[in-house]
Length: 97
Image (cartoon, rainbow, N blue to C red; front, top):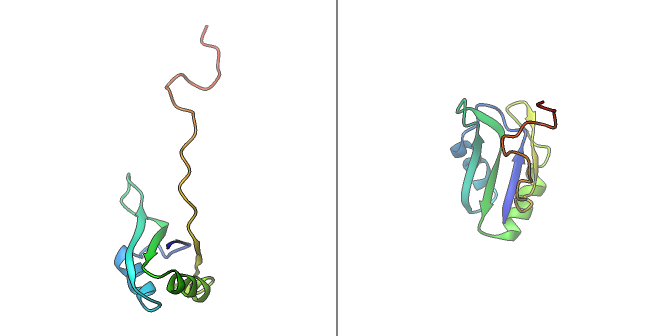
């Protein structure tokens, strides 16, 4: 089961996130999302756990938990939605004449 973890301390690494969740069960992967431009944490991440039962228990126990002075947001991750439209490099509706 894939878990979304928000409002992480800015100093948190993927290893810190993995250690936090290992207290609640077997962790398959833990990844803090980093900003590409600054290489700093974006304040959220994802954890994948082997057992759905352990994942649900971790969500229940860690939702709202104080970590580094911040209250975590922890819930089941939703499937990633495809990004919509935009782009193309043609500007934003202004007349160019």
